[in-house]
Image (cartoon, rainbow, N blue to C red; front, side, top):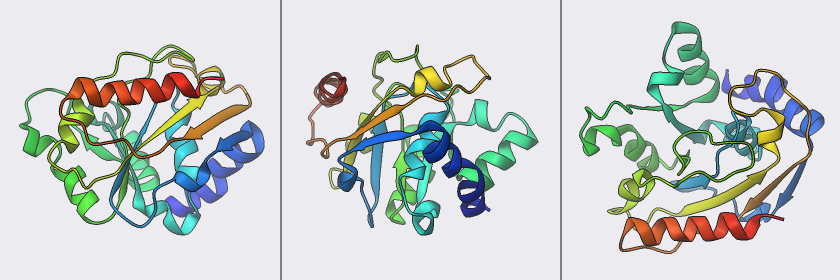
Length: 201
C-alpha cells in the first residue's frame, strides 16, 4: 500500500508538479538506523523527503508524528499508518521517556530511517521556529545513531500551515553532513540552527 501510494500519488506531485532542486543527495542515509532532522513549514515536508528514496526503500522511512493530530479519527489513522508508515508520538506529557520513544528505538534497531522535526510542529512559511529539545533527548544515549539535517525552502509557500490549497512552487532541498555528538541540548540545537541558517540562499 505504501509503495503504491507514493508511486501513483505522492511522487508525481513532488517531481512533476512541484519541481525540486536537490543539493547533496548522496548524503541521504541508507542501510542503517538513522534520523533525518528537517525544518518544518508544510505538510509536504515529509512527503518530499520520503520521495527522495527509491520505492524499494520507502518501507524503511518512518516519520515520527503527533498521535493527537494524525490518529484523531479512523480515516487519518489508516492513511497515516498504512500509506505513510508513521510512528505515533504521544505529546500529552503523560508518557515516560522510555514509553515515548519505545517504538522509535525499535524502528532504529530494525535499521529504519526516522524523520523527526526538531521544531516539533509547522512554523510560519519560510521561517525557522524555536528548536525543541526532544530530538536531543531521544538520541543522547545512542551516540552511534547518525542524525542528518535537511533544510527545505519553498514548501511553506506551496502548502503553508492552515491552508488547504496546494500551489505549485519550485523548492530547494539541501542535505547536510551528520551532526557531531553533543554533550547538551543547547550545543546540539546550535549545530542544527547553524546548518539551517547557512543553507538559506
